[in-house]
Length: 256
View 1 (cartoon, rainbow, N blue to C red):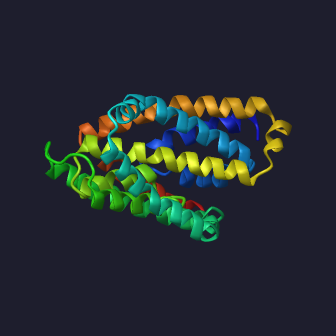
View 2 (view 1 turned 90 degrees about the vertical axis):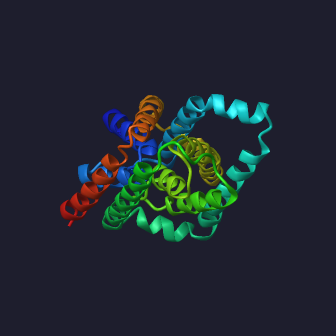
């Protein structure tokens, strides 16, 4: 992978990891469309570490508050929401992996994401300030939505935020719960990849490429989180819904 490819891949990861348009789906389509060199497992791990650092920094106040106040209720709901993705990853890993080599299926998943986002927009428009944080049931629903996002083309943030809104949360509650819920999943998936691969392989690669990709992913990730919160406050989630529909149909057309 060249330095230019690392910059583009890092930017795609940072922007699409948090905006509701599917990071894995866009990486598959971008690499396929432009003919990029297939990134190494460790480059993928580096990008996820960078976006994990971005979400931890952005929500550091919430994380410290949960620990300091011993908010076991929220911690329980986060645990409940994490379980479906863990089970899906353990039992359906091979089936999920098949989607990553099929850009056509990824494009269809983007269309599904667009439909879910438009449903979330309808819920956002009907709700003013009522609603709040998660309940046991909504935590489970959001967790199932997160498990579905293991498929490339299905946005994790789009599915979980929309599921939270449809489950009765307000915009702030859905936003906070969605991304706090992402931390254990991203961390677990990253550790799993590290332990299942030859860790010495990273030393034989181009360190400059890894570092560049991580920095770009981190900075664009922070900006993307700020943008998504603004979109939710302004009730403009439909923008991303329309984008995913267009990207999905374009992918189907261009990759025939």
